[in-house]
Amino acid sequence: LISILLASVGMVAMEASAQELVAHRGLHTDKSAAENSLAALRAAQAAGAYIVECDVNMSSDGELVVVHGPWLGKKDDPDRLNIQRTDIATLRSKRLPNGEVIPTLEEFLAVVAESPATRLFIEVKDHATPQIETEVARKVVALVKQYKLQDVVAYMAFRQHVCNEFVRLAPSGAMVFYLGGNLTPEYVKGLGYSGINYAVETLKRLPRWISEAQKLDLKVGVWTINCAEEAAWAVKSGVDYITTDKPAAIERALQ
Image (cartoon, rainbow, N blue to C red; front, side, top):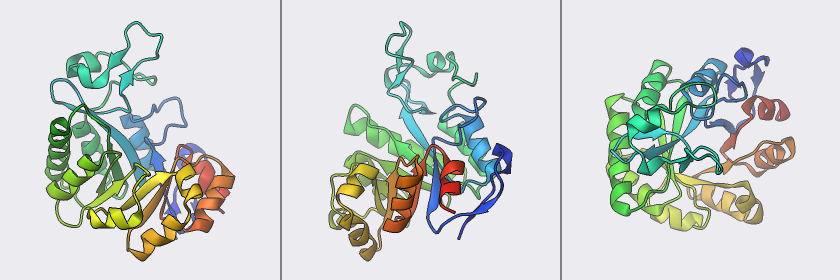
C-alpha cells in the first residue's frame, strides 16, 4: 500500500489502495498552481503524490515545453498561439493562469531531480510528422539522461511511432505506455511496450483487456478519473495506475 501525504493541500495523510495515483498535469487544485506548471509539480511533490503526469510539445525552434497544447489561449482569443508553430521566446512571453511562464522540459526535470521520489510520466503530444516526433523523442530521452532520471521517468504517447522511438532510444527496461486505446494488449506486448494507459470509457467497454494485459506482464493505467464511482470501478478492476485531476479527493474516496 502507498501512503500519500496530503497535508500541504489541507488534507490529512491517508493510506491509499494498491493502485498508484497519477496527478494529471500536476497538482493544480489550488489557483496558485496551473496545469503543467512548476508550481503544480512542486505541489504534487510536497503532497507526496507518487507520480506526476505532464505534456510535452516542441516549439517551432526546437525547444521542448511542458504544456498541453496544441493551442495556447481560448478559441476567441485573437492572440491565440499554436504551440508547435511558435518560437520559444514568444511562448515564454505569455503567462499561465497562475502567472508563471510556460516551463521548458529541462526546467521541469530539474525540479523533478530535486525530489526524485515523485516519479514522472511524460506524454509526448502528436506532432506534424514522424521526423519531428523522432526528434522530440530523442531530445526527451537525452534530457532525462542528463538529469539522471532514467529510473524515475516513464514515457507515453498516442502515436505508435513515438512509442516505438522511445523503445528504440531509451535505455533497456524503460517504461513506455501506449495511450491510443485501439491496440489489444497482445499487440502492445509484441511492440515491446510496457503497458497500456487507456481512457476509462475504453476499459469499461473492454474490461477483458485489463486481465489480458496483466497476464502478459503489462501494466494498465486508466484516465481520467475524477469521481468516486469511477475510482471504485478502477480499483475493483485491478488497474495499476489511476490518472486523476483530483488526487486528494480520489484518494479519500478509495478509503
